[in-house]
Length: 303
Image: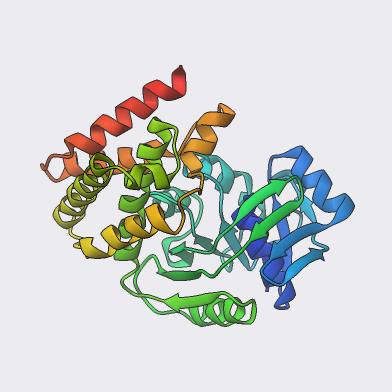
């Protein structure tokens, strides 16, 4: 398989390195010139539980992607999905599959503007990944991938990707109920990401306070109600467990929205909290808490 990783940040680099080691030909695509240069000049350095290893992978911007892809795995931020997939149209034909493992709702639908729906796969990942510096990433601990076809129909590519991820040391599950998994992660991110970003704190201090725990619990329940109204009922208890783990075992993790605010970048809040609000409106239910976080985040981005 010849694979483009579209979005060579922390997560994209971890997957690129591991799939390369598993025997697939991998080409990293990004817009960050420093990241591209560092990878091409010194290799991609991945630090894991078993030490650091350097992987020699080509990296470039989309315009320099010359070969047609068998598979494109998308890791860009959700707000860049449409522009990113459009930039790769010249490397896509009717045999190319595209897998999105991004945060947020609606990424697959954005990709469908350039790719046939029966060639799109969607999923979520819990693989840990941190960008240390240009060309250097870290991944400590375990994580996995759940994914399936956008159409809900089985396809040989699902087993091919699952097998490759397994060879790469990533637990992969082909899950026909992938929409529930996506909603679960969206609600978790909408709760923990936006709250920590607005309070400028990591999950630990939020969980140390009764009001913080109560706030997270209420946001989860509201998100679960919207998911149910949207035709995708989820297990809210699972999201509560994820939040508790975040507040205890990942106390000092800096959520991506907080990282973005501190760096002066736009966040993914429109496709996370904003997506929950849009779904609530579409199905005539309320989501006042998520709408408040969404609007506060949009104001905070502009300050």
